[in-house]
Image (tube, rainbow, N blue to C red):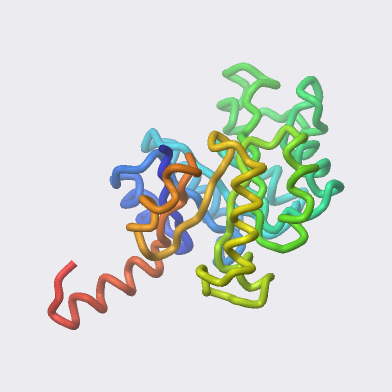
Length: 231
C-alpha cells in the first residue's frame, strides 16, 4: 500500500513537515490552492531533497505549468477530471519524451541536474483523476492507455452524480463498483480527505492512497484541542 500526504498550503515548511510523516511522498495541489510557479518549484525541491516522492495535481493540461513541474523533477503528474479519450492522449504526449511515445521537450533542467545526469529518461508516473460521470462511463476505453493510476476524487465524483459528499448514495456506490470491476488494484488510487479509518474500507481494492489535506488536518486538530479532546 502506497500512502501520500496532500498539500494545499504553498509553503516549504509544510512540505518538510509532511515529509517527516510516515508517507511515501507528498502531492502538491495546484488546483485548489494559490501556488505560484516559484513556490511550487520550491516545494517540489524540498520534497525531493527530503528523499520523498513528489506529485503535482493540475487543474488542466496547461503546457507551461506542466512542463515547469516536469522539469523540476516531479515523480507523479496528476490531472484533474480526465473524462475523454482526447484528453488521455494529450496528457501522455505532454509527459513522455519522444522515444517513449510522447512529445515532451528536452532541456537541461533540475530533473536531470542541469545536464549532469542522463537525458531523455525520467518520465513521471501519469495519474488520471476520475471525478465525473463521464470519466466513469469511458473507463473501459481509458484503461487501454499508458496511464499508471486512476485516482478517485470522492467529492467531485459524488457531485457529478448529484450527491456531493454522500458516499453511501446508490449512484455513487454503483460508480465505484464499476470502477473496481475495470481497474486492477495495482492501478487503483483514491483520495480520502478526512476519515483515516476509511483506508481499511478500501485497502482490498486500492493500492495508492492520498490521505487528508494539510488544511483540514490543521483545522480538525485544533477543533479537537479547543474542545479539550486532544488529538
